[in-house]
Length: 85
Image (cartoon, rainbow, N blue to C red; front, side, top):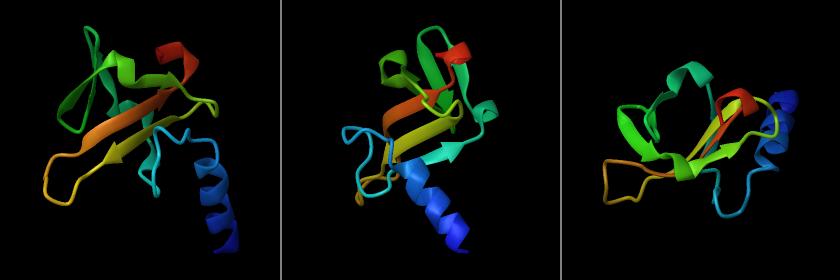
């Protein structure tokens, strides 16, 4: 259990402040992301490519902010490996 908590803290430590607030960021399988024109598609939502950043750990991550009054999350940042960025 301690290793899992330490791993989560280390992964979370590199997320930029403008992307992550109170654990809004999480790793996701890269296979969940698709690309269409200039948009990134995830969980049935399309987000402009400007939200995509290079992932420093070579994995995919997404940072979302779900305001309490809304059912649809707002994306803050998507991190992808260099090959897909």
